[in-house]
Length: 259
Image (cartoon, rainbow, N blue to C red):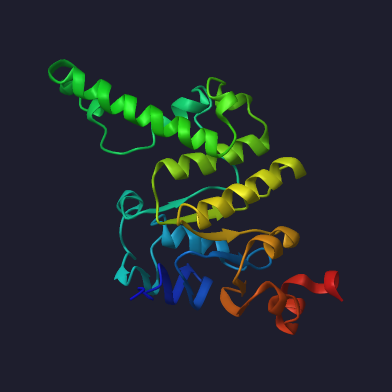
């Protein structure tokens, strides 16, 4: 029997910054195997939700659950180890390292991180590094960055850096990936590549995605369902077609674009 437990559940969550309430009794679920969109006007609370889910902020109230278990209050590295990984609107690549090295640093608990292992277990360190390199090369091939494996990350274009961020998340072998503005600064050609990679990651590798994005064309072609926030609250949820026709969404976010 297929497990119907949501991979992520935001349950009556609030977040206050002094006298400002950024998230106001917000509740929604992300189901396994979906590419779920999270949209809303600037200041709607979307990025705050991402920061709450990934442990960079603590909830004022409510619960955050993954696979039915409470993760609110855990530290970022503890949430990472539970298979929840995020990207940022501005890529945070290791600029003076190669594309390949950026990926090889991702796996946690590497033997070579312990200084004594290099002296006492050099064969084990080499074997693990070889395995990680093979996996990194496979991921780079998957996102069409293999030809740039030896290039410094700082020399990549904006779109290539977004592909690199996606590749780094794949190296972490996550269950849930939170993408923050994947389309920002990406040219149409690389955008098509990014969309295809996200779809393949979902449908072939079994990853689940929660995507913040302002580009409505991208949201409508990539995400289903779409969740809409405004003033810290969820105001609508549905298929792209339903969201496009929802009057609350038109008034709160889409505005005159669709009228």
